[in-house]
Structure formats: C-alpha cells, structure tokens
Length: 417
Image (cartoon, rainbow, N blue to C red):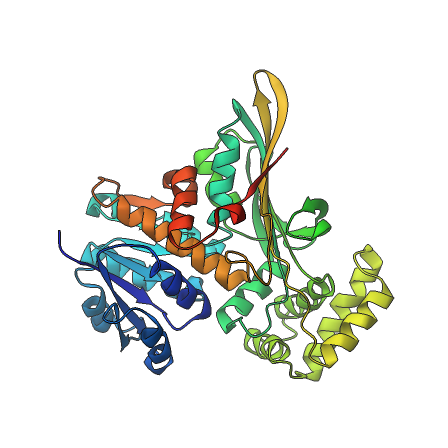
C-alpha cells in the first residue's frame, strides 16, 4: 500500500493543531494535508513538523467544490473546525459523496444527533465515520466501556468533566459551546429513556483526581447521554456532569449563558465578552452585569463564599492565571457476580508538567490523535456507518495508541472503586 494522505480541516485551531503535532509523533506511512480558512496561521506549524510531512492550504469548508477537491482520495478526513453544529454536516456529507473515512471531536448534541442519522447512508456507502473522538466525549466513552466490562449488568453511568483556567488557549467555537452547555435544554437518559432537563440546574458533589478533590459539578448538555444508550440500552440512568475550576467561573459562564438563552444578550456579544476575559481584557458592562448575577448565585447555592468571589475578581483583574486543574471521571454501577458494584476510572494528574492534561486543548488533541491511530490501523476492516468511541475503540488498544502519540503510561487513568 502507498503513503496514506490524511486531511485536516480547521487545522489552525488550537485543539486541531495539538492533534496534528501529537499524531506526527506516531510512526506511520502518511502525509498530512492541512487546511484552514486562514492558511497563514499554519506556516509555523508546518515548519515544526518533520520536513516533507505536511503541506498547508486555504479551504472554506462551505465551498463544496473546494472541499471535494481537498478530500478526494484521503485515507482519513479529520474535522477540527467548530462549532460543529454548523461545520459537521457539510463535511460529513462531502465525505459520504467522496466515500472517504471521517473523524471529528464533536461535543455538540445537535450535530451528534445529525451525525447518527447518517448511519444508514454511511453503511450503504461503505464509509466509516467516527464522531466524538476528543476528551469528553471521546476518552470518557472509552473509560465507560472499560469500566462496564467489569460488570455483568450495567444500571447507571455517570460521566464527569472539569476544565481549568484556559486563558490564552480557547477559540470562539469553544466559547460558543460552553455558553450552550451552561444554559439551555439538556437531553439526558433517566429511568430507562431520554428526557429533557435544563443544563447547569442539578448539581452533585464528586471526588475527582488531578488535585481537584471533592468538587461540585453541574448536569450539562453533552453527547454521552445521547450516544451511550446505543451500547447500554438497558441502563436506567446515564448522566453527564461538568464544571469549571476555580468555581467562580461556573457562575460567570452560567450568568452569561442565561442572558443569551433569555434574549438579553446576542450570542456573538456574549462570546466577545468571554473572549475579552480570556485575553485579560475588561469586556462589556452588559457582560459583567450578567456574569456577576451568575456569580452571586454561587453564594446562594454554597458553591463559593463572598470572600472567594472577591478574591477571584481581584486576582482576575490583575491578569492572574489560576493553576490548571482538569479532570475526567466515570462511574458505572450495576451487578457483578450477583452483587451490587461500582466501577470507576479517572484521570490522575493534570496541569503544568503533564502531557495529556496540560490543558483541554492537549487532552482533546492527544485523544484525537490516538483515535486516528486506531482508526487507521483498522482500515482493512469492513466497518461502515457512524460510530461513537464506545462502539469501536477497544480500551486497551486506545490506551496503547495514547502511548504511541507520546502519552506517558502513568498518565493514562487510574481505577477508582
């Protein structure tokens, strides 16, 4: 077989850039075609990669002809451009027409549901399409499959994620996603079927690794409760809880998200406000009014004290960046040998000095690179259709792929019971 051509769309984004760099560490006979609507931002990345490995070009993914030419004959197309509720549809449909494999790290419910609706079309075309191949969803799905394999019956699945201070490494698509999951409808799995909740309303305390300890997290709109029932249809409850560290960020984003949901602030202006804060700028007064409203609510719920909020605001005002703490955790409950059991998996370390969880860009990009390795290794298989990680990425193979893209073995999760 000849050299495989791997196409990245949205290659200049922070998470996709990390995926490219980490994928380049793995051994393989391939070349990388990097595309972005801002190709000048790719020049430095191409120079850092091994000579001759990658080329860069301009692509507007909404240009059907240009998109078709870019992906023609690819061994794998990786979509790293968001928000996925606007970008995934055109690229997936182009890959179906071109009959080339597709992979993304989509974390939006709407686009995930649309992708799953293409399963029969992808199967008929003989094309594998791998969605949700990031940190959450992605790693979390694999951890669930790993933990569930120890049980004879799965009753409940709980997924947890916490993201630390990400200033300087967040793009507008990520902020768009964050506002949507902090306020608005939340599809979840309860009492054996799908139900609709409101994001960020229900809370739960859970013990997390990576230096976080006991942490309050919020039920949030994420794809895991939508996709995991396909593999575990008899589960009673499948929930996803998320949070931000330090805790005042939860109130800040929730307040702005509610303003968008209630029509008090356009999404574009809300993203402008958060983007200003992420680059240590003041932001709009309207943004601050909504953010402070959300932060004051943390005192009422007991998530933070007034003293903690004042300290957070004072440090933020002088551009202080808080120590980065990121965590993923899953807990699966059910029966083993006829007895109730709880099986868990979680991250062990995060922040400076780590590889996989330096920040969420590193976690998502490294996970994407590992999923790519497994998908490319499987190309001689006859798999076709739309798949989420728990359906195709066998846990031990995925963990080994994480090592192939540079992750130290001692960073690859721990068992918690």
